Image (cartoon, rainbow, N blue to C red; front, side, top):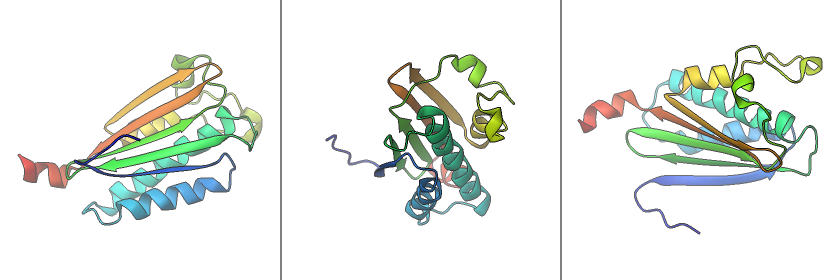
Amino acid sequence: MQKRTENNFMRLEFAARSENEGFARIAVASFLSRLDITLEEMEEIKTVVSEAVTNAIIHGYEGDETGTVMIETTYTPVRIEIIVEDYGIGIANLEEARQPLFTTKPELERSGMGFTIMENFMDKMEVETEIGRGTRIRLVKKLAKNEALCN
């Protein structure tokens, strides 16, 4: 286990079941609730957690509820970092998957806007994926109110 002293963090792992998306969203929001962030920032964070977890469940495991989704959230006074990882099938064409309105699940009425929403609500998004090994999404949000205090 990695030792961390400079940041506060939490790590959760849960079954890749659709009902756990709400749990993940609330867990991250509760963990961050002591920070001095705006309601808008909190809503954006909750939305990106929902998008990332839903993508892991629906696309990463394609309905296999025996899979695991991991979320790690870290914060400092000036930024929040969220990592959502699955150990599923991976993304065959990441460039295509990141295009607005692209979906591999139109029968599930998926809008194809998950990555676009994540990119728009966060300051940074990195995606690592490998076929047969899964996908890791790293999301970073700068806390503008607190960043000004540290300069």
